[in-house]
Image 1 (cartoon, one colour):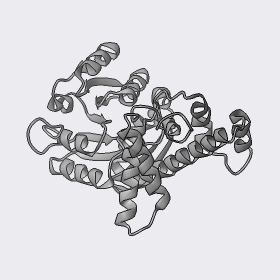
Image 2 (tube, helix red, strand yellow):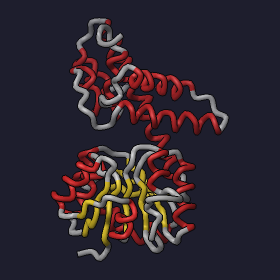
Image 3 (cartoon, rainbow, N blue to C red):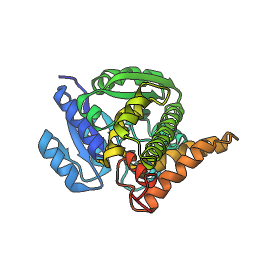
Image 4 (cartoon, rainbow, N blue to C red):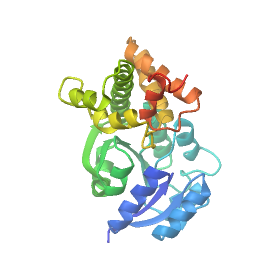
Length: 295
């Protein structure tokens, strides 16, 4: 059994499945924490971990703490410089932060961790719920190389495609670009299928043609049939697509680039959220482009 004790902060569908995976790989998952306490309590019972009721208790219970929270504000809150925080008693601990965040937030968390003698790494994920459960995530990591090397065995149990990117913030930049292109492809596919439907074309045939031509994409494989059948069971929500599109769009603006496609895609996913559709899978952007589906 590996010696490291591992804890999780944020045990929604991604974090919980990562915890289950490491437990099955004979790691000691010592504690789990979530702002939605019932989720953490249920997972703790399932995998034999402690349900931590404070962030400081999470740090005390583990050598490596994996965080999977929703946004920049949540990440800064769990690494607060006062009050209950993962930084309390954190000297010698390693944090692996897996949320999709603005790159500068990862840099700030690294600064805060170093100030108390801890290490912070990025572990940006470009995969979804089934991959988290099966240990087949695509993981992009950044931060101190020696720290990455130390935790690489843990990460290899979560990933079949593990890549060290570089200094802190760079993995988040790459992840922002991955999601920017993915979201542009998703919005474009929704418009193509929506127009095909408006023209009276058979969408199954159209998807087959797309798959054999330059219109093919990974998004066509994952979202095309769902768009056609209005099956928007959530694996990556429209709300997350809106958030991630914004991160990439801001990076482009800060770099002085005009990115009209990224901007238009951000507006589409923002509109999904404004219409109350943000909880649908990102494939739900098709609800905005097919005639008669949603005003």
